[in-house]
Length: 171
Image (tube, one colour):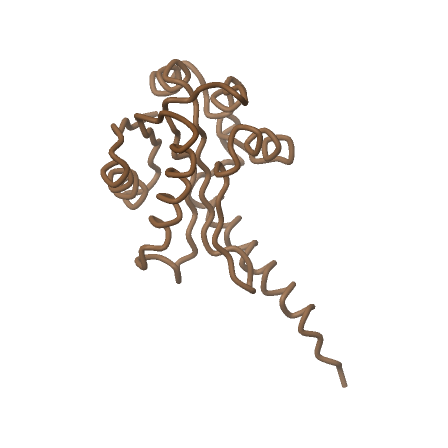
């Protein structure tokens, strides 16, 4: 007979959602096979937190993460270099210096588990993160490198809701 341990069960469930999120990221973005795409390591997490606390936003429950959002505020020069293909996503983060005045924001990654889609929660989380960053920086442009039609639709909706110009990367 085994004793039931609720904490262990929650850990297993959290790992399950966490694993599902990582699997979705790999399926949609194929980050492992593209060295130019951002690999979010501990070093990058520290830098993102220094850039702005709302760069990484998540919605989770007792079973773990349900929605992950990654936005990177940056400068127009860096945005233009990225949109034109002169720099990679990794270089975009490398060139973004904490403490600068940012006027653009890159909607880098939004990952939502299937059971959370179509409820408006992903957009609400994104809007909250955008507004938090916009309180501290004069953001006028949202740019995105969409991998899915849903991602493209979300970016359009966010730009409209927050009154931002939208630019799309066509890498």
